[in-house]
Image (cartoon, rainbow, N blue to C red):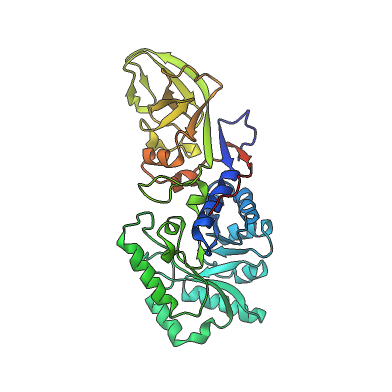
Length: 374
C-alpha cells in the first residue's frame, strides 16, 4: 500500500511535474517538426502515470506508449479523446474486442498478432488503428525478415488496418559512436520500403540525440522525460525530476572498532555517529548499494556503511552535525541524481526509478516553467 502521509512515512519521494514539462519541451524543441510522444509504461517509470500523462497531454503530447493492455485501459480515460494510446507488447490473445471498444492501438509484433487484429476489424466492419513494429536488429520484438516476406506475398493482409505508425527500437542509442545505430537505421529504412506508407518511429530518448536522421516522424522519449541522462559520458541536459528524502529514525555514537549491520561488514575506524534511515531494499533502495552509496545531510556527503536491510540503511554522519533524529537525508536529489545512485548500485537509472517503493509518501509539484526556446 502506498503511504500518503509524509508525517508517518519512512521517506518522502518528491516528483517535480514542472521538470517533466521542461524536459518534454526541451526534447520537442530538439526534434523540430518531428512529433514527440510520451512513453509512460511501468507507471511512468515508477513516478505515477495518472499524474504524469495528463501533464504531457497538457503540453501537447498526443501519442502515448505503454507496455501492457491493462496499463492502456487505466490510462485511456485520463487523456484527450484525440490522443492515441499504443500497447508496445501487442495484445494478449482474445483481448482484441476489448481493446477495439476502448480505442486502444496495439503495436503488432508478429503475424499472429496482426491476423488477430485484422479479424477484429472485419468483425467490426471497420478499419482499426494499428502500429507495426519491425525487428531491425535487437531481436526482441517485431516482424522479422520472414514475416516481411509473408506480407510481401499477401499485401492485402494489411488492408483492414489504419496504419498509424511503423516503428523499431534502437539497441545502443546511448552510445552515439556504436555502429549498431546506423545499421539499424538502414535496416529500418529497407523494411519501411516493403510496407505501406505510414509515420515512422525509431528514436527513443537517446536516439533523439543521435541527430535528425534518426528523428523521422515520431520520437518516443521515456527516460529523458524523467531526468535520466540520455547520452553516456556526456553532461545531462535534462532537469532532475525526483528527490528521495529518507527519514532518520535513530542516531547513535559508536566507539572505534564497533561493527555495523548484518554480517558485520563495516568497522568504525574512529568514534562515529551512525544514522539509521527508514529505507531499505523493500523500498527499492537496493542491497547492492551496501558500503557504496552516498547520501547528503545538507551539503555534506555521508557514506552508507554496513549492509542495506529490508527496511533500513545506516550512514556515517560523524561529520554532519545537522543530521538529527526526525530529520532527513537526501538519498536522491540535486546533489545526488538518480544516475549517480544507479552507478553506485551497479545498475541503470531506469531500474532505480521503476523500483521505487510503495511505502514512500509521494509529493508532487507542478510549478509551470517558462517555455524553452528552440
